[in-house]
Image 1 (cartoon, rainbow, N blue to C red):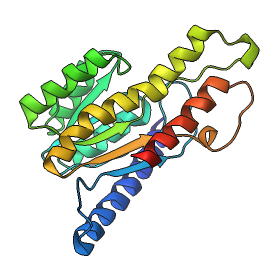
Image 2: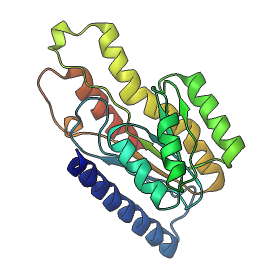
Image 3: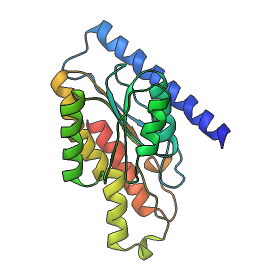
Length: 219
């Protein structure tokens, strides 16, 4: 409901404030060796496809987010703050893009499967060609499959891994390369408490979130 959306926006705002403070500290301390990527796991509890997300880019520059749940709250808040938002989702994003534009935010979007490298390459080329590259990325797409490990098929396991771990890797690789090239950018990978411990009957989901935290720490 409205309360939940407001609470999600509050969490996003807190994350934005943290990243902005961290970037100012990096600039003051001379820590900008290559791209000052704020790559950080954001723990939260997942219900359905989406969990909490937040990231920032320079105002007016391109920021890619997913378009449901708190991804929607993130896109709305960042649009209100003057960021160019590019929602990406498996479902059509036209309605969200139009809503952001009516609110005065520059926005564009693309629908596709983030676990498909050809799609992610197409997305990256489009953002680079039309908007000068991405300056921020929020990886908050996710699916949760609940079943005992012995009842989880290989296809079900692989689907969770594709969306929750392989997709974020592809987006970090292709959009992160644009940030490295211009020596500026922010990435937020949304993890879960399930990435810090075990949760019964969620073997694929737990493994994917543990992997996402490991990927984030490696980056």
